[in-house]
Length: 70
Image 1 (cartoon, rainbow, N blue to C red):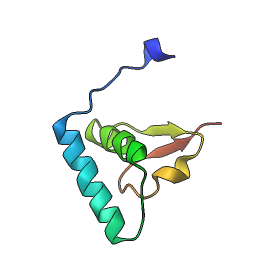
Image 2: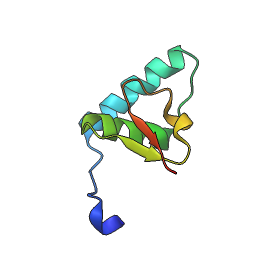
Image 3: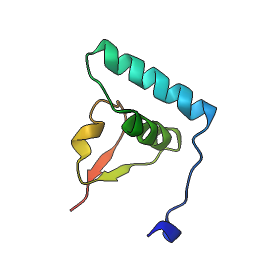
């Protein structure tokens, strides 16, 4: 699977986006783990959807499309 999925770099622009998302989430008393912020911000930056077995952990990231893995 890794050979068919491109790896994206975590850039300063994405880090800034993750920081803004995390700060807004904390204002709403929603703590998003750092790894989930990094994944979610990267997906938003590249206009990707997330496929996850537990998509609920990304609920605090507005605009992120999450598909449940079955």
